[in-house]
Length: 126
Image 1 (cartoon, rainbow, N blue to C red):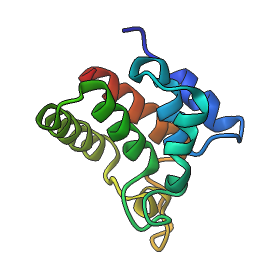
Image 2: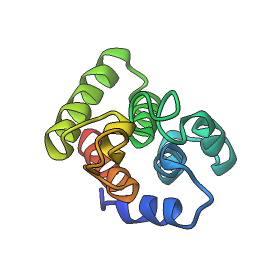
Image 3: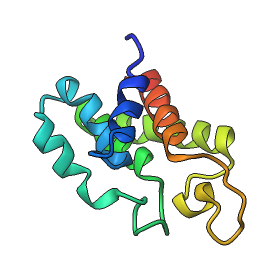
Image 4: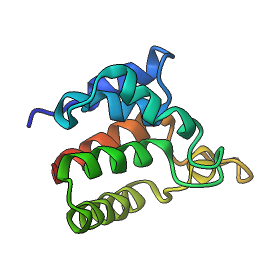
């Protein structure tokens, strides 16, 4: 598969998609859904899960795509574990507020980079 990470980051940068929506909608054709459905799936994950308290929205989006693409619980869990582990190693965190430096003042990764990384790591599992 040719990488689509640049498409995902463009969707985020245009301001019409949050991190989760950017990832999900980039792979909507692969999982058999339309753009509107893809965006609705990611509505609640802007600023990460739990409004920065939990997992980065780009990673949540990758998990949604992986689950719909594999249609197999064990395969999706195994693949997502790989994505999370590699993302953590690359960026030093998977939690939105830590990535953004909330409370520490040290930004580990901007949202555009998180979306690109989540897309790249997702593609390795697809």
